[in-house]
Amino acid sequence: MTAMTLTAPTVFPPPCAPLRFTDGDRYEWTHTRDVLTRTNGLWVPSTVDDPRDDGTGTWTDAEVRSMMLEAIGNWDGRHRFTPVMPGAVLPGRAAGTVPTYGAVAQYVRSHQSGALVPLRESVATYDEDAAYDIPATITAARATDVLWAALTDQSMVEVTYDESAGRVYLRYDRYDDEQRADAPVRVTCLHVFVLGRTPGEV
Image 1 (cartoon, rainbow, N blue to C red):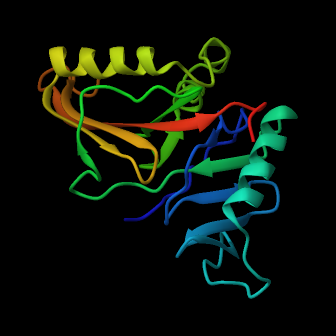
Image 2 (image 1 turned 120 degrees about the vertical axis):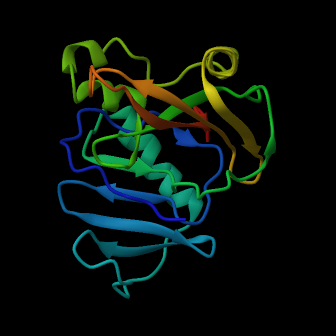
């Protein structure tokens, strides 16, 4: 699995601090280009330009979560969390619902950058004003509605729940008729529902 970085300007802080992290997740300070990548259960520092460990020590999940909660509380869009991109086989077991937790952040794969980005950040690339109407997080019931809509309306639908990472993955195919009116292009969409904590939780 690999994680990619969105290159468009960040408008919003991370939507929530994840309930759990998993190896390959990234935490980035966009203004300094410093990056932490979770490796073997610890966060290893590097830079965007040089992904090698910079040797300054490691960070824990608790430290990264604390930084995220502070960024969210301060509405600091210079901080970015990027979940690791799943591979060809979605992690976890087949599922049809999203487990009930305090917050669920919906990340989607950007068809421009290939990275996983929060839904409202994806909307902001097309219409920044409209993105402010997108909530940072949704309820598990609302996330489950998204799953069921995909199961009903889309083709080649896969849904899995990876309990160890605290994530639900939704992948499906659809036709994008905006790209070519004469021959719609089939695209694969990916949604990652990250179970999270609200800023008031520790």
